[in-house]
Length: 317
Picture (spheres, rainbow, N blue to C red):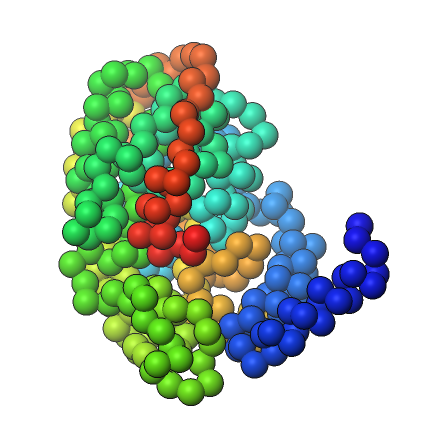
C-alpha cells in the first residue's frame, strides 16, 4: 500500500484536474461507492445463473440484451420454455472472468464476435473461433449476425460432439444501418459544462441529452431484430437443446443505489435490473447431442488488433 502522503497528493492532483468534470464525479461515485456496495449486497453467487452449469447443447449469447428488450422483439410463446434470469455481471469482460476463469471446458467450442472473450477467456475452451478476426464488417464497424451464425454451423459440423457457444455482437452497439453514430463528437464543442471525454456511443449521447430515450431504445431494439433471423436460423440448423440468453443488459438512465446517479451503458460492477436481468429461452430441436470432453487449445495472442476492434465496438481504449 502506498504511503498516506503519496495517496493524498495523488487524490489532490486528480481532484484539481477533474473537479469540474461531471463524468469524473459520476465515475468516482460509481467506482468508490456504488460498486463496492453492490458487490457486498449482491455477491456473485446470490441468485446469478452459472451458464456453464446449465443443461444445453448450444448456447446463443446476445451481447448486451436486456430481458425486456428481448421480450419486446421475440415471441416468447414460441419457445419450449422461457424465463428471466440474473447474470453474474454487467459487462462482457466481467462476465467472461466470472463465468470461465475458474475452470477449463474441454467439451465446449466458443464462437465469438466479441474480442473480450479472446482477451479474458481464450485458454478456457476446446476451441475458440474468433469471428471478430475473420469477419469484421468495416462499413458497419461490427460483426454481422449472419457471419456468427455461419461460423457456429461450421463449428458444429467440425465438432459434432462438443457444446457450442455462439456469441453474437448484437444488440450491442454499433447499431447496424443506423444513424446513431457518435464517434469523435466533442461535447465541449456542443455545449458548455459537459464533460471532457468524446462522445462515442448512443449511451454517451443520451446522457448528454443529444438524443432522446425513445430514439435510442428504438435503435437498440432494431439492432436486436436485425440479429434474430440469424439466431432463429442457427437454432433450427443445430440439433439438441439450445438456450438463447445474454451476458448482460444495458442501462438507459435508471438510477443506481445507494447514490441515485443515473447509469448508462454497461459499466462493470453495477447490479441494476436493466444491467443483469437477461432472457433464458429454451428450444428443443430433435435428439440431444452426445457431448465428449477434449483437450484445451489456447488461443493465440490478440494484441493491438483486439484493442482496435473493441474501440470500434464502442468500448473505450
